[in-house]
Image: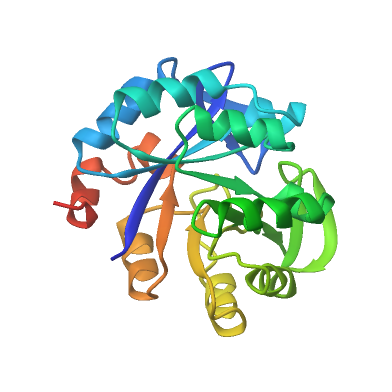
Length: 241
């Protein structure tokens, strides 16, 4: 089963998209994220990737109220990321209705805490964020690069119980120039023990079909939906009837 996971990125409670993580390149698509989430649900999609961009910047969860509203008023399986930096942040996000939480920067900067989360909540609920630029891990909303080889990083966390990873090629995100197929093929080869969720760069239906043929767990689709490059009707073939 290949999962289509639409994305909602939040700034000041509004649905926005950035280009390559740049807050100066912000475009507001809808001031009411719940409306957007309900459109996804009406199209038969069952999952949602909800990102708190304010939280990522502030290094603490900010937009938990939006999460709570969407989790309460839809049946979407929400995975939440952005600003989850402490035990309290994690508790707030799960109590607000998230089914899964994505941690990327925390896995680099505070690995002991991330390991504790994996141990306490399990690899079903904690998703490893493994964003990369030139196959090196990028963190803090991609504002910082590291020397960590992304495949070694993912394998380290597989060994500690990670079951899922969301991986974005930072160079591709928001540009509608196609996903980084090579990154995902390499990750499949070198890290066979993890379910990969592709993210970033999806520009058309063909991109999605190619990712589906790779037997990934799923793909996060954001800007392509908002810019009309892919319609919700076209995505319905992957919806769970």
